[in-house]
Image (cartoon, rainbow, N blue to C red; front, side):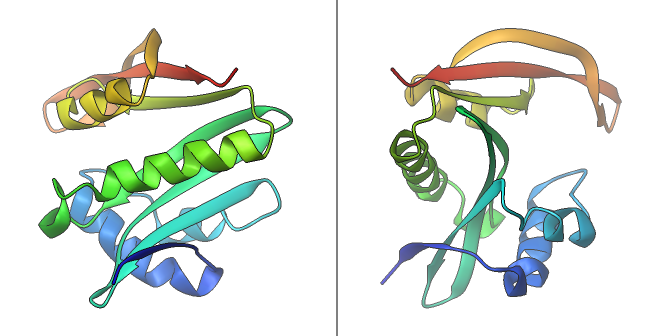
Length: 147
């Protein structure tokens, strides 16, 4: 049985492990802990194996920013990211958001395709924004209008 739940601060250590395994430049445990406040919602995907993925959003008035979505590498490609994204989109609509915004590494083709399948459109780029193994990588800015 798997389920998407709202995570609490006691999940930070598990989140940090997933983050460190899934990202070349992971968020620190403190940065993850700082996302448990009144403007944030933190979703987790768990099953009998434990926490397998999470997503962090921040809502200010009617704008939602997807700050991080992360799935344990051994479970990527199984629809967990899509389930998390579906959940946060529905929750944003329930909370009267007008748009969901995000940025993603230009080289992360899997994530770009996931966001495009969910209706996100590219709105701009930040040149050389992310550190990368061979220098810098662009950030692709994307929006999903929620009418």
